[in-house]
Length: 334
Image 1 (cartoon, rainbow, N blue to C red):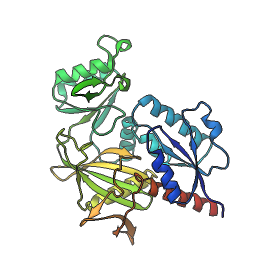
Image 2 (image 1 turned 180 degrees about the horizontal axis):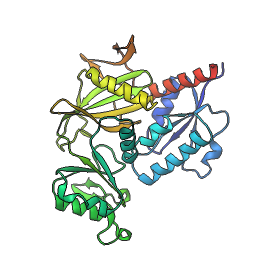
Image 3 (image 1 turned 45 degrees about the vertical axis):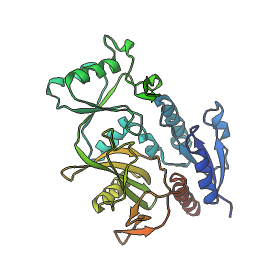
Image 4 (image 1 turned 180 degrees about the vertical axis):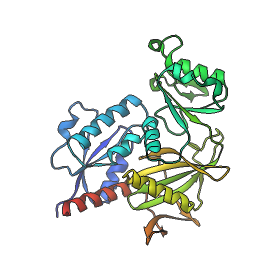
């Protein structure tokens, strides 16, 4: 039987070697497509069965271009891709993520997208502070700010929409420290829209992962910066079954097989989805431990059953390739 051949479309510096290793481990051929080449489309040959996509998480403009090109491959030309287009469309796109969560009735923090300063400031006197302001793209808490009062909110609105006119907007951008000196990341400036979110007092955050028929979960503990995102502090606790079913039911409703839900657990024991990400920073070959043993959950007879083992090699690309190959093989046989 002919080997499955996959095309790899990977943003520079984003896990290409890990994706290649995952293809080798799963015994599939691959071809790397240079998405930065103006002739990238000509590299997508007819003998490629499907495409593995690793989009950027740094510049919103590049992410938008990735989305446009992936849309062409998947929705216009009908090529098979993994993750799916909708999974990638919500990745590093908090505007889309909010629409998906709201449209499918998934519990999440109340979110608003403001497209002009007048609207952003219209309810200022009735707003409950603190409020959370987020950039559309940006991981590890790098572009999240907790706004504590009206004056700070006005300042960030002026940056995003311009002090006098939108044509003079400088944008809101994160900072990075070099030799303890904060430097503005102007290339990541966000302009002309503002994302606000109700502040939730959380106990911790849960990272719940589904890849194919495998389910994982662990705690993301709060770091010194006050955020769970980016703290890299992990609690290896058995995830509550309620969260496993929330992950399962949400991904099933959205027809998604490769998705991570970062879920806030409040002091009152309530759960709110904070992030949806098809790709995560997976530094370990496992994403869950129960009683010190790495493994995964699978569903058997409508119950979650723990299976010990290592299942997340190569930054979780091994299970992604495995699930993609399984899907492609099933479609070929039918």
